[in-house]
Length: 259
Image 1 (tube, rainbow, N blue to C red):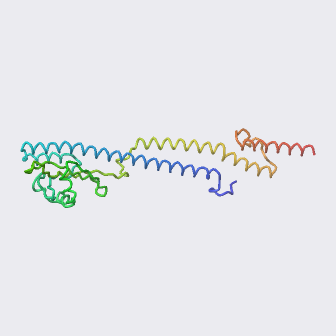
Image 2 (image 1 turned 120 degrees about the horizontal axis):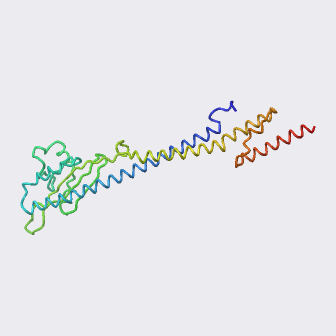
């Protein structure tokens, strides 16, 4: 048995597939678990943003109704308090800036945000009262467009400006801080325990008995077989084969003694 290369041994051929199967199962479950968590985080972020924007929309509309337009920049500044809000600005349907946190902020990142807005989308959003929230994974952010009242025309139809909010959210599933370490650790421990139990059972009932039977064949050819080394107590085919082999050895010895 010592002449057999290690990769041809039955114990190795049983161990490697088990390790590969455990690793594959763990990797697959980890991927789907993290993906599900990230999808849940994305839905929660969208819901949080929508809820806060609904409140802000009502506040801006009341400011217009009560002629408190001077307080609009102050309310915009309060929106910047949120750690994920990078920019908040009110624009008209042509994309021109109407109000922002401070006048000197109309530039830099805020100006870049305004220039990336689709004029057709702004014109369409200004004709409705529906909030639009789009996630841009390439920029790790939500872009929200919220119609707010500006004035009434002569036909008493509302004219609307648009509140545009840039809300930062990363959907990268591989970020370490987003990993659910406790569930993954418990899952890994469970898979390791199951894999170890399966490996022990295969070693105990397959690999070791096969090695013993192979050694018994060699010993039988050399005439020095020890029947006590045969796995005759195993409750499987190896045990049955060992019993038959032991019986054959006993008959050989009886025949040799009679001769």
